[in-house]
Length: 356
Image 1: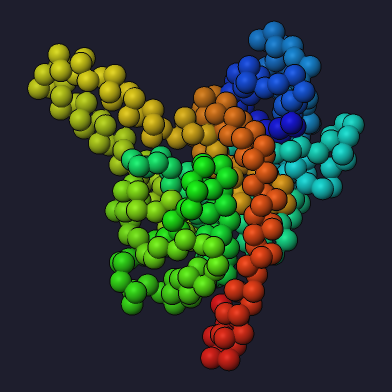
Image 2: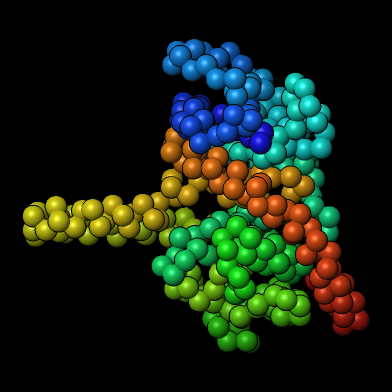
């Protein structure tokens, strides 16, 4: 398997990214290849200084960098030699099948999320029938993993986009996480049928009309960790906000508990510290690595901007698992099977004067 990593993406790049890549070599097979995308001299110096010599490492020279502050679409168009653009090209059908610069099976970046999405759509293109790709984050809930989509790629989706997110994420939950009949829900401001925007309600009708999809209705923010759904569909703005709020809340609760227990009974803290560490590990995004951008024609993973070496190592492991599962091929077939659902809604909307 060929895995391309943007070594210049993220708050701690390039050192943390390169350290994670080197650490991941112990998990790779002899036939695997790790393609480090970034300034050639910088990468070579890092490897030389640490006496890293491995024939499985390749370098794809990319002298430019797209920073976190830049406008994604503009940067992708203007910085053709940036690490994000070069990475996306490696993951696209534009790359040769063999030889120097051969196509990667999966690409990974912790850089500018908007730029990754733009580069993915522009160069890797979309799977057949897909309108807009979405980021599917696996949340480690108390009763098992929950796939939340979208988490930042599409802040203002149409109902058909959200419907496709539900269909794609259900296949991800089934194939990658082994959930036999994933329960698909929508994030809303209440569980009552009458609540929600027109977009939410039209999405509900699409999901409900999809054969073979186990749609269970609306959930609220408090239901995210309760195990009431295996897939939660929402727009990129709400999904990203929920994710970061949960991350911040978890840190605050752990910090408050640790401070209070240390103040009241330091001995008790020593006894329960292993339990704290185990719970934290289950919920730490560094342990879970990146998230796939579902819907692109290929495989792109986007990691947290604050990724450390451990995050990247785990993300590379998840990249391999995703590609090996063949989920993209299943998603393409599934969207073809149920494409009539959206067509029916479009026709109904045209007749009533509102099109999804």
